[in-house]
Image 1 (cartoon, rainbow over the protein chains, first blue to last red):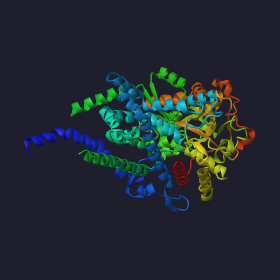
Image 2 (image 1 turned 180 degrees about the horizontal axis):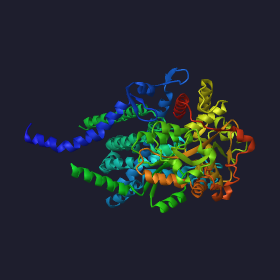
Image 3 (image 1 turned 180 degrees about the vertical axis):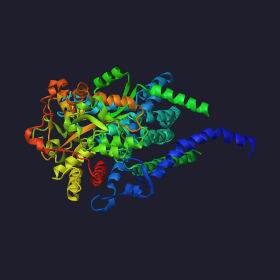
Length: 295
Length: 340
């Protein structure tokens, strides 16, 4: 090994150590725990079993030992994926016009609009979620206002429903959609639209054939940035979901607390990791095929 | 070597000195009287930090996992034997404490901590149902409220996520006993719970506020919390299920790995003082098990319907025993299934 290569290794050593200790190490522990037996109240017993993984996919009746598919886990997983996809869709529908609006402002005002978008980040997530709770609860702002208008007689039950979780997540993750969309639209050459109109393209065609393909990396990045944290969301469904209709993050937490089954929690965490990995692989595939097209 | 040892000792002494004046309490949420803590802080020049938990299982899991940094924990009586078996509590010499004499006779010799070597009373109460009578006008002295909800309450019921209480209530509802190991009864209880869950709104903690402001109109709840909700919202009423309801006591123990055991001992003795025990009750609205505290109790607690059990329903109250290991396993399995 020559001098510069050795130096390179030495210089990257702190980063490597950080990666091993901070990322690979904990993951390895989770992976190992998923193959152990649960301890009495918490922790694990050091004996190998695939029971946790078995229980991710199947359940055994506690009274007659009959085995069936773990539809409860599937329900929770499906709810998580569904809510995350919906969150992505809602943030996109709201975020795209917002990002377009900001990108088409004069440069000196863009900074101000972007600044306004980031203001919610100054407040703790927990507090923002409680603020949403104040808005949507039965005697909260929204229901009181609708009742005052005479539109409804009794409060609408929003709190503790999937809808409440969706509202909370869409609110929390909206900036993560707006910012990459803005970055993509900002680079967009608006003369292309004029050129398209000159060639008699309709507005819909301009949107479909010119704008969307060019800002697509921004759309994909924003979607990933919203979808991935939504899938593992914990605080929002915990507070707004009421503990009955859990998302996968809450269900994993439950295994480490009340459920007292760390191995099952570890196995479910690994499963979540695989799902996220699949989503990211899809992302890489989409963007790389795009690069090929551009070449 | 000697130098290392002395400096190590010096550091240890220094940290001990800074650790002095601190106390970390791990208690149920919205359960610790701020006035009581303020008084304790002033009297002993100790800085108290309170951390909340929402269920006995959560608390036990966190403490057993270690590294929590708490000095004091307040488990329900049915969990105390588990804490003792696992060596999680210390024996702080409670019978020698100055205020030990104040513990009421019937709370002194208790089966979960026979000689009161590990724990002292915090508060005791019942687990029943709380209903907002503007939403439902029928009989509320029944577990039908949450296990077979009337049409008015369908989809509106909350159940507090407390395993021991919820499973025991369900067992009594189907004609069994708390801590039963009878498979038929357990299966019936499981089926009743799973079937009823579809008609619940949530399984959440913190019902004092949510009952008060009308977000929840029916829930399995504790009497003191319901008392406080009724003070904010007169429509809230407490029901004692005739099929059986739970009587319990929460107890204060010092953790075996407490960082501030001396302050913890001061606190344990402090709360057995009748005037201080009355402060605990005046805040959380439960009885306390300390003789002489009646004199300091707020007058509205003496005849409150959440405190005084109606004569005809007295017999339905069952003290939740400490379950056998076999029963515990069934409870855990049923609870896990219900949580899914």
